Image (cartoon, rainbow, N blue to C red):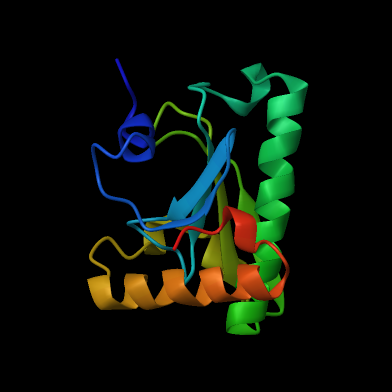
Length: 141
C-alpha cells in the first residue's frame, strides 16, 4: 500500500513542494515545528533510514543540507534542525527546520493547525532562497 508521502509525490494529495528531482523531493510539513519545517523524502518507498541503500541515504542527506541552507537563509536562524524520526509515516523522511533552541525539536509542540497562508509564504521563502543559492533547476514554479 502506498504511503501518504507516495500519494503526495504522485500528486494524489496536495503538497507544498520546494525541491523536486528524479530521486528526492522536499515539501513543507503539515505539522511544522517552526516556520519553514520541510520534509525531505525519497521517491522510492523505503521504510527506515537504516534500510535505505547508502546512495539513496546520501542523496537525501545532500538535499537536506541544501534545504537547510535555504531555511537558515530565509529565517536568519542561528541553527537548522535535522531529525530522522520515522514514526508518523512508514516512508523515510528527514525533517529540516529553522531552530532557535532545543525546544524547537519537541514534536509535542508541533502546530497541527497551521495557517495555510503562512505555509504558502514559507514555501515561497524557501523556493526563493534555493534559487538564490543556485538550485533553480530543481525548484518547482
